Length: 350
Image (tube, rainbow, N blue to C red; front, side, top):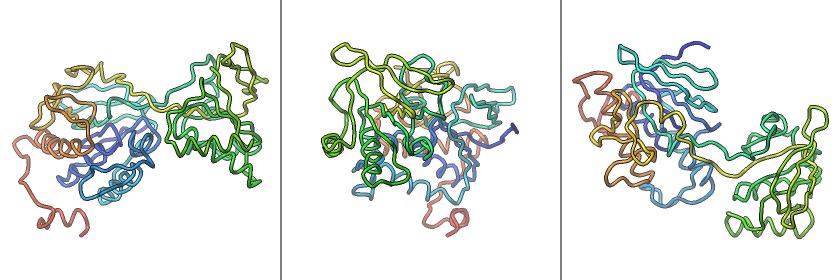
C-alpha cells in the first residue's frame, strides 16, 4: 500500500476527532482520520445514535447521529480522508521528529503529529467467545447491523445475539419484513441472550415483546457454547439454556450486537505516560509525554477532567494550537475569529 503523508493523524472519528479536524483545518493543517469502527461518530453513534443529547451548546436536543452529521457537514471544506475499520497497531517516532504509523490492515502513514481522540481506547464490538466462529466473519457472522448484506438475510435463519437497544430493534425490524412478506425477509429471526432481561429502552423492549407474543419473533434464553458446521458453512449454534439443557439453534447468519468494548490496546506500548489507564496530558496544549503526540476526549486524564463532549471540543481547540506550534515551532499563529477573518472565510468557502 502507498505511504500516506499528512501533517496530522487523528486517531478516532467520534465527536472529539471530528471537531479536531475542524480546528486543525482553520490553521491550514492537513489531517487524516483513522477509526477502528466502520463509520464516523464513534460510541456517540453506536451507543447513542437515536437517543437525545441535551448539553451541546445551541442545540436544545439532538441525537448522537444528528450531532455526527452536523460535525461532518462542518468539516466538508477540508475534504478530510477517513480510514475506517483500521486499528492502529504501530507508532514510532523517527529521528526527524515525524512519526511512522501502521494499522493492522496494512495502512502506513508518515505524519508530523498525532492526536489521540479514541474515547477510552479503540471501541471494538463485543464478540461471542466461541472457538472457530471468527472464521465466518463477513460471510455468516456480522457485528454491525448496518453492514449485514441483504443476501445474508433473505430466506435465512438469522440469529441475533445481544440485549442492547440495537440488538432488540434490529431483530424486531427483521421480523417486520417477514410480516410484510418482503422479498428481503428472513425465514426466521431468533434473539439469543443469557436471560430474559434487556439493557434497552422501555419502548424498544415493549416492541420486541409484542413481536414475540405475535409469534413473528423468537427468543431463546441461553448461553452459546459451540457451533455446528455443514461442510465449510456454519449451520447451527449450540446453547446451554436456563435449565441446563443443550439446545441446537439453526443459524445461517449470526449478528452479534452486544455493544462495544473499549480496548486501550497498543496505546499502552507507545511510551505515553498513563494514569488510571488513561493518557496523562498537560492542559495548555493537551500534549502527552511524547513530543508530537497530543490527546483529547475520554482517553485522557488531568485534574478536573469532565468526560463530556463539550469538554472534548474545548480540548480540541487547545490541541490544535499545540499541533501548530509543534509543526511550526515558534509560530502558533494569531488568534483569529471566524466571524471576521478573510483567511478563514476563504478556507470555509463563505
